[in-house]
Structures are given as structure tokens and as C-alpha cells.
Image: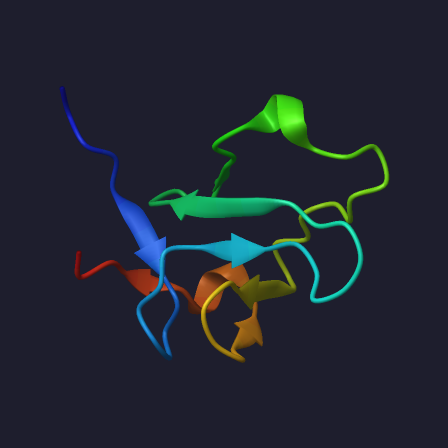
Length: 75
């Protein structure tokens, strides 16, 4: 089974991102083509903030920025 190449936070290296810092959010990862990879798409709340590639939030630290700023994962 081939593993997926993921992108990471340029600040802390986390591969987990959220669609917003407040309210219902989507937790996801970003693949090498800068497309969101949602682990459980069937569990997304109807009122969850959509994923905006121009404004991503790291799930582990305070970084926020665009998908273009993500770096190759070191994991």
C-alpha cells in the first residue's frame, strides 16, 4: 500500500489543519497537490466552515496561512 505524500505546517510540522478557529470546523490534511484530504467526510456538520485554501489553520499551533505556504512533511 502506497502512502500519501502530505504537506505540513511551515511553523510546527503538523499535518493536521482545520477550516476555522471557531465554531464547527472540518479537520483535514493536505496532499502534495494542495487538495484537502478529509478523514471522515460523512461526519462533517452541515454548518461547518468550508475549507478555504487561502486561509488554513494549523491544528497544532497558532499558524494560519495559505495552502501555497505549506511545506513537505518530514514524517
